[in-house]
Length: 269
Image (cartoon, rainbow, N blue to C red):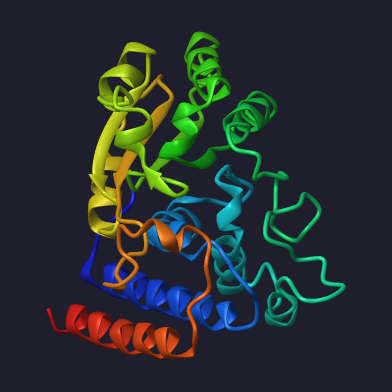
């Protein structure tokens, strides 16, 4: 069970502020990046890396288009160098939009959506004494392979899988409820497939930890993280345009200023 203290939450907030600011700064060096989906996953991925993963545990970012977030967090863990991160999407760089196996800290090449959970299941069978953490997008729940492995994992009694669903309600350039209105209720479907399921506020680290701590034993675990794409930047939130776009100079300045005020206000509480 992971402890939840004021100090832990405050340190998490500071890291998440730093991650978002670093992504914004990197956005000024590239034509476009997946900033909306990266921002919706910040607290989720930071919590996994800094508070849940133990030595030799594995992490798979199935929503590989948001790899810039993983890169930034790998730097915060001193697994990837700052110099390497600065080469992101630059000429002759080995650090691209999607994660590639062989890059420091990357366990699988992902980005073609729907494959991360399948890769994770193989890792979980091979590494039975290790926890395998997987982050997928809600859009990946529209992929048949995802549901095939949700069924397979529970059927094979693979209990060391921890699935985090970034449920931001947007699929690329439109809303999930418009493309797949019968996607919900996700929790009931996962439970019917034999999983332990919890839901949380995906931008609240304490809520993520609280619900993770309540997972059932002898079942694969799924945490539905309710998030907002582009969080917490007002002009980005729930706006499909920010699926794949870089802010211009004035938008970048506005976002940086808002982030500073947002996190200062959080620290006052």
